[in-house]
Image (cartoon, rainbow, N blue to C red; front, side, top):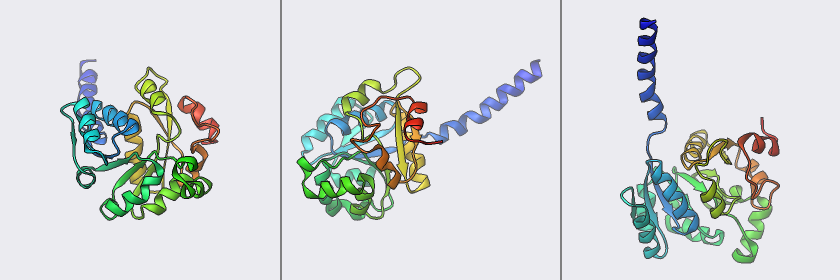
Length: 232
């Protein structure tokens, strides 16, 4: 028994560094320090990630960083993009073309988390077209060359802030991407924010959980979400 116990302890010691390496802290740049941006910046900082907030109003970014503490700082949009291993863009959908013009080239090759929803009454004609086509596919067309991840888009920030890190079973968040490595990062960031990630296929397939879909706004477990989206 002593030898068996020793072997188990040795195996556990060997595995532990691998587990830590798989969920190593990331640097996350955030464009847009409003309700969604500040909520997820706080959740990710709590999980051990480093955050840089940016905003068209620098004071918003500064307040968001100060509310979190040592793991967060504020910078310009360009600085946040350069800082991030991954970048969360959390802005009104109609602002995406301006973001693309400002930092589109610098975002190429980056993992970009996209929770943005086209709302025609707010964002105009381009949002109506995006809603019809599918939000993620439309965002990908606006930001060519990025490794886009669709997540966090179908629930209000208050719901997600309330449900994050609840006792199991946790709230499920579907995640979609065309790039396998981006999907892996997206799954990690959903989990680290305190939710159960549900891989849900390609960006095109993510239309199934766009705002206004059958799962939109509904708090579900992972099993319930997979069933609702007809996932294996």
